[in-house]
Structures are given as C-alpha cells and as structure tokens.
Length: 324
Image (tube, rainbow, N blue to C red; front, side, top):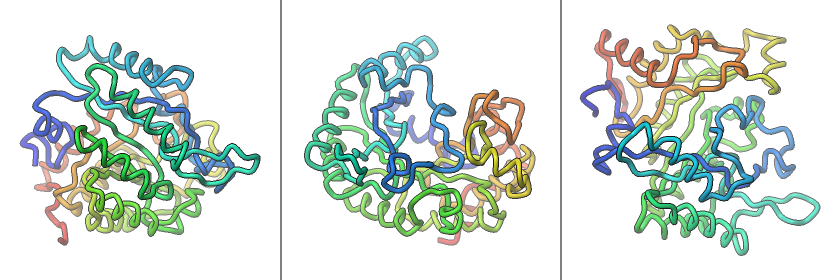
C-alpha cells in the first residue's frame, strides 16, 4: 500500500514497476462496437458519448504512430523523463465487424487478427512506447486474441481493461450494456489463464442502484483475478439517452454530490481487496457536456485527495473490511 494514500494506488504501482514515470497515451484505432453497429444494438449504452473522454490528439484519421507522437509531444514539456503506454481506448479494441451487409460479431481472427497485430506493432515501434493497454468488452475476447496479447506480454507491458460497469444484470440490461456479469467473469478468468494483466471499469451511481449495490460490487470484484480497477461516477452528459431519462426522473440516480460520493468511495475502498490496484476514483468530462453531477470542475487528483483525507480522519484504508 502507498505511504501517501489510503489505497493501493496506480501511480505508486507504476513507480515500483518501472522506476520512473509512465504516461498512457490514448489512441483511436478506428474500431467500432457491437453495441453500435447492429450486432447487439445500434443505440449503444444509454450514457455513452465517446467525445467526453477522447483527448484532442486521439483522432482515427491519423495513424496510430502519429496519434502517439502528438500525445508524447503534448506530455513531454510537462514531465522531463518518462516512458509511454499506448492506450487503445476508443470503442471496442478487439472487435472487427464483418464486411458483409449484415453486421455480425467477428472477433479478431484471420484477417482481423492480422490487422490487430499491425496496429499493436505500429504502436510499439514509436520511440518511448514500452507497452499496450487494450480497452474492450468482456464479450469481445477469445483464445486467439489472448494468445496474440500473451505473445506481446512476453517482452512488453500488456494489460486488458474490460468495461464491466456493474455486477448487477438488471442494471446492465437497463443501461443497454449488451453483456452479462457472468460473461465478464468468464472473460477475466480466461485472461488470467493466459497470464495477462487484467483490469475492470466500474461506474458508481448507475440508474436505480443503491449504496448496498455499490458495496456488493466491491465484494463481488474482490474475488475476481483482476489487477486494476477504475472507478467512475455516473455522469449525465448532453446528447445521450440518459439525458432524457434523467430529465423525466431525476430520482433514478442516487445522490452524487461530491460530499456523498467521497463517503461512498471511502466505504467502497474499505471493502475492496487490498491487492487490487486502484487506478482512478472519478471520470472527467468537458464541463459544457456535463449535466450532473457538478463538482465545480474538480480533477481526479483533487477528488482523490479529498477521499484520502476523509479515510484518514475515519481510520479507513483499502481492505480494512475485506472478507477474503
């Protein structure tokens, strides 16, 4: 556990692992999502808008190498010495749609697998890039993809991030996620089989979920073979289906005032397996897109300091009440 924070934080893990600062650089590899192209749905998740988290240099019109170089050029003046991880962030990065008229789920096998290999090779060819972080859905992984990633992991840092969002199937259905919790468990266990580092994304405050649900999520994922976790607060963004649903029924969301969120996250951490590395506690979106909650533009690191102070005041730390 970090001496600075009351949880097993990602920055400390990176320093222990690499001995220096390592920055993720997001890239858009030009993939789509089976929840958008018609295989599962054409609507996507009710809260999703990719613009809310894509940095300016992350543009699929540019090559992978160009995007990475733009990101490196952006971060280099801020930090004197560092390495980089190519973060395949946008959409579903192990999914290649068929070229046929009717969309069908075709994981990256055959030509698709070779395309994925080319993109990863291009990323790793950029000076200073020492690894890959691949964001995807738990229903878009298989043995072929994992074998490919395991090959890269033999000589590079490699991590897969799965968008779980909730461990409650009724919630996953309501938000139109298009997969079940059981599929996520299966994906995580298959990833462990190949010895690849695995992380999850989880949203705190999804529609109609209660505090008991949030803490049940902490207990459930604590028993999965994962290495990292990203927490996000539920955000209502403009031009999403959730915007309309929230306008019709604001009570569908729990109280996500900053004060209440800090308390919930602290209690969540108290339950969470202390071996899990916590990468972040919040998500940041452009203020002109954000309808709820309004925290005055606070950054992730600012909220982290508030949570840390709350936990210290109350004698809390990650795993204090973990039932291992």
